[in-house]
Length: 121
Image (cartoon, rainbow, N blue to C red; front, side):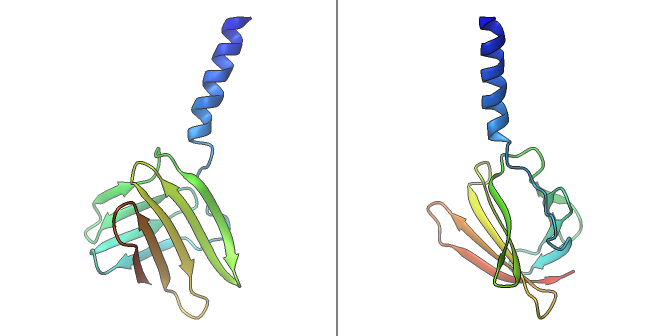
């Protein structure tokens, strides 16, 4: 019985690190270009990836620890926000209602905040 309890505690602790997963819900899927870094942010219904403009995967959030993931509205504007300890960053993406652009804001420990208005690919 003690072993079963210990195994359950370990499983609960391990699942807590990955409890917040990526589910974009009603947030638009697609790809947006960060022209400052020649990178493409690709949003699917279950994952977010950063690609080079030639299509090579630069970063894939699948399998990474995603914390505080939320899809919400800022006024009527859809917003995704989350943090990723492996990347050392917190992200916020807001979809424009008047055009296809996406505004990305990144908070980085020890570095200045980063913000860019990305156009749809």
